[in-house]
Length: 313
Length: 214
Image (cartoon, rainbow over all chains, first blue to last red; front, side):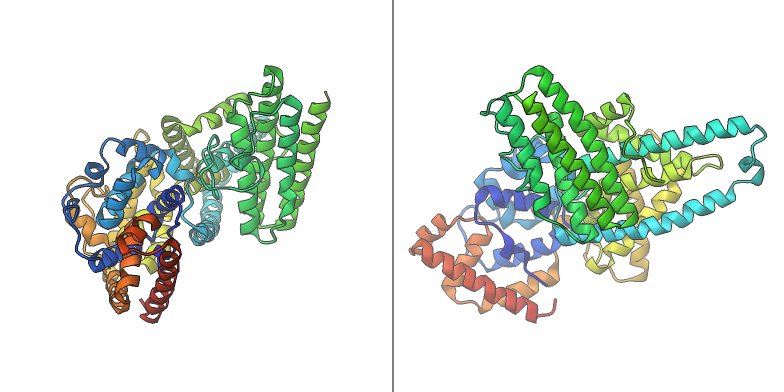
């Protein structure tokens, strides 16, 4: 067993992000055990000792509690943070509320790489089971239903099904990446400290003029090719990180750009996002790294070119 | 079947996706996905669509579900129970009331799976789930206390006891949220000493806990 507490960051802001990851992790009972041991071993304290006993996390945190449920522990005071760490049962109480009543922010937090890998493995396992279920569903359809009495109706129905499926894949892809795919992040404020591309915290430099802004976006996108992941998991993570940047661009207000350029950029981003979602879906469905990476390379090349061309326009 | 990368999605599809940041839209899209899963399992339904919708629900809720299960199940059982929950969810979705929020309903399915798993194995933590499958709330301090991993607590406590006075004080202060500045002040040492002592002590503790085979 590795001690989770040894990963507690020194930086206070980073410590809160770390805590957010713990709160959505399967390892929180372990962390609570570590903290409880630590608390028992610490020198007897003063009046603060056990003041949290019999209180809920909501009572200890007070008014900012709803903000914590909406946007994470970054709003916690040092005192509240210390109290949660000193009384780990409060962390478990907070986790209960985060899991049942937490906002969409919490769906953007990825506990850690190992849990992400477990989820991907679970997804693969579930997908094969599901494939069996759906094939048996198809097999259950009576022959009379398969051979329509009206070929034209059957053709229309098939077309409708295909269209519905395509639309749903797009919806599902979009939703998946907005919410729970490998480290997805609230578009306007990435939370998982992605250090490259459009999701990088300082990627949208609003102090630049129009041309420099567009060029900076193109350069940021080119960071895609700096890493060449060779496993499905690593590539999925890389694509998802790029995709988060797309979300950020779609939702940003792009102050340095005139309205026409900003509208153009958002429309282009929506189209790029759709393509990226499709690449990720291909990867997740087939596990084909080379195919998905080549497709991503092409998309990124095109979008970089579009951004640079727009600068010249 | 995979979508063509060149297909343009309908405008309303994009609008729905763009709104999915809001809680209401998230819940609404959960419901829609759940309905698609249910409809796809009907004799004349679109099974492929159901499959994709179901995997979207998995993407969205699998992490929270695993964390929920891990609160009361043995860590080694979490993955198996998760699979069981998702499979039952697929089977039960056609009979689900479509106006109820998806995640609490999913946790109810999970509660039943966890209870079943307890019939086969000794449960690890001294807690139970309530009849509705909701997680514990309010003045449930005893229950929350019961979720703490007692084995880990005991193992680490034994290791901490082996540390000398100052390293022990530094580690426990640091792990209870004190900054290095506060530790330096309390222990009357400089930052460098505190930093070194902390990292040396955490290495000792890590090694000790690993040896304890928890």
